[in-house]
Image 1: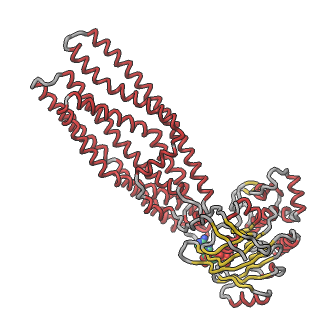
Image 2: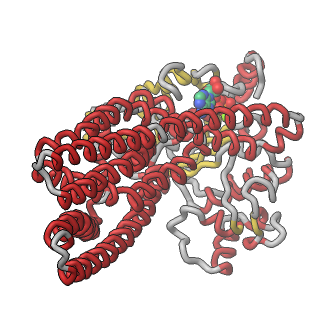
Image 3: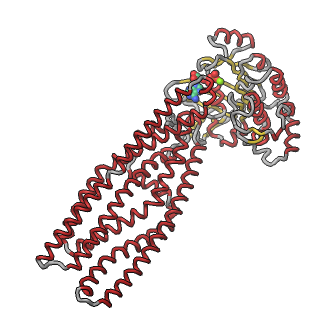
Length: 600
Ligand SMILES: Nc1ncnc2c1ncn2[C@@H]1O[C@H](COP(=O)(O)OP(=O)(O)O)[C@@H](O)[C@H]1O
Ligand SMILES: [Mg+2]
C-alpha cells in the first residue's frame, strides 16, 4: 500500500533535563565556550575594535610615563635644569589627560556592547524556549529557566561591560611593562618577574576549582528560584492542605544550599587577590634590594631605578586587577555554560522530508505501530494502530491513566512517537509545517490554557483566518458557527476580561473558551479531551448540538468519561494500559469499562 522513506529522521531526544545534562556539559572546555561566545558578539566587531584601540592607546600612554620620569630624573633633575623638568611635567600631564579620555571612551563603548549582548542573549534564549518541545518543559522547572534568562545572562553582561577591555588593557600594560623591565636590565628584570611565574602557575591550577564553585552557586540560585515559583503556583493547595511548613522547609533548604554555595564561591573568588598582593610586594622588595645593590656596584642609575619601580608597579597592579577580572571571567563562563545548554538543545519536533506514495484510500489520520514513552525508559503506548476517516466521529474511552490524553497529544504532535508513524492525510505528520498542522488539527485540552486578556483575544489566539476582525464581525461569525449561546454565558461577551489566567473564571468556562477557539478555526480534525468534564449537563447538550452542526467534513475525536457524550460516535475505541482496541457497540464499550479496575 504505502511505501515511505524518511530523510534525516530527527533523533528522538528524550532527555531534556538541563540539570542532568550539566554533568556532561560542564566538561565543555573554556576555550570552546569562549569561541562560541565570541561568535555571538561578532556583530559588535566595530565597537570592539574601537574599544580595543582606545585601550591600547591608554596602555601605551601609561607605559611611556615611567620612562619619561626616569629620563627627567637622570637628565634634568640631577643636573638641576628645572626648565626641562617643567617641559616634561607638561608632556606627562597631557599624556595622562589623553589616557583619561581613551579610558572613558572604552568604558562607554563596552557598556553598550554588554547591554546589547544581554538583550540579544535574552531574546535568543526566549526564542529557543518557544521552539523546544513539551518534553523540555516537563523536565525543567520554570524558576530555574527564569534564573538562566535573568541572572546568568547578566553575569555575562557584567563581564563584557566591566571587565573584558580592562582585561585586555591589563594584559597589554603587563606585557609592555615586562618588556621594559627586561630590556633595561635583563638580570634585574628576570628577578622582578620571577614571582609572576608563581602567580601564573597558581592561577592555572586553581581556575577549574573556582569555575566549579561558581557553577554550583548559579545552579543553586536556579533551584531556589524554582522553589519559589513552585510554591507560588501551588499556593492554594498549600493553604488548603495546610502544608505551609512543608514548603517553608523546602525553601529553607534551598536557601541554605544557596547560602553555602555562595560562601564557597565567595571564598574561591577571593583567593586570588591576597596571593597576588603578597607576590607583587615580594617583587617590589626584590627590585628595590637588587636595584640598590646594582647602583652601589655602579651598574645602574637612580633615574633608572625610579623608572624600574614604576614599571614593577605597572606590571603587578594590572596583575592584581587580573585576579579580580579572572574571577569575573570564571563567573561569566559558568553562566555562559548554563545559557549555552539551552541554546544548544535541538527540538526533536523538526519538520522532516518524506517521499511517499499516497494511495487514494489514505485515512485522515492513522497510527501505524506507534509506541511512545515520555522519558525514554517507561513505555506508555504499546503498538497502537488507529484509523480515523474523514467526517466521522470517534470516541476514546477507558480508565484514568490508560493513555487517552497521551494518544491525543501524539495526534496534535505535542510529542513525537518513539517508534512507528503517525500519518496525516497519508503523510508522516512530522512532514507538515507547524502552521499546516495546526490548521488541520484543533484540540481542546483537558487543562485548557488561557492568557490574561479578553475573551476575544483568547478565542482568536493563533487563528490566521480572523486576524483583524471587528467585534461586530466576530459576533456574526460566532453566530454562524452556532456558538452565540456559549458566548452569552460570559457577562460582557467578547470583552469579558480574564485577569489572572488561573482564577477569574471557572474551569468549565475556560473549556468553553477553548471550545470556541477550536471550533472557529474550522479544523479538519477536532480532538476534545474530556472537554466537557467540568461543564453542567445543559451546557454539555449545547456543545453536543454545536458539534452536530459542524461541517460534515469534520472528523471528531471525543475523549470522554461520560458515556452519553459518545452516543453518536461512529466508532468507539477502548484505551487501557497503553493499548487501544475497537470496542464495537456502546454496550460492549460499557462492559469493557466496567471490567477495568478504575472507571474514569
Ligand atoms: N508528562 C508526562 N510525563 C510522564 N508520564 C506521563 C505524563 N503524562 C502522562 N503520563 C503517564 O502516562 C500514562 C497515561 O496517561 P494519560 O494519557 O494522561 O491517561 P488518560 O488521559 O487516559 O487518563 C499514565 O501512566 C501517566 O502517569
Ligand atoms: Mg487524560
